[in-house]
Length: 106
Image (tube, rainbow, N blue to C red; front, top):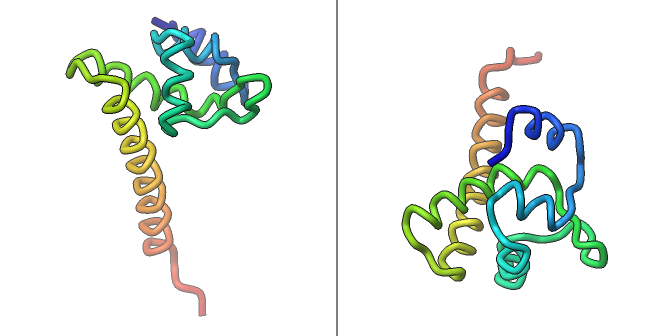
């Protein structure tokens, strides 16, 4: 499990390696590669197998759910896609809410 210092280090970086992602999420490299095969994760650079550091929190959450619910890899990948979609919708909702609360320009 990562520490607060690790979280700060991740926040400062834009890309992390497959090894770092696997370590942060408590997964093996093979499991991360399977998530890519299932379309749940997309490397930012497939030749170097690097990922955006923004995916770490989502992968961690999905890994906890996987363990708690004893999900197989296909279900785990589906959870990953659902979590990504939820994040997108929440961002959209925050944006729309901010627009609605902003003073009207005339």
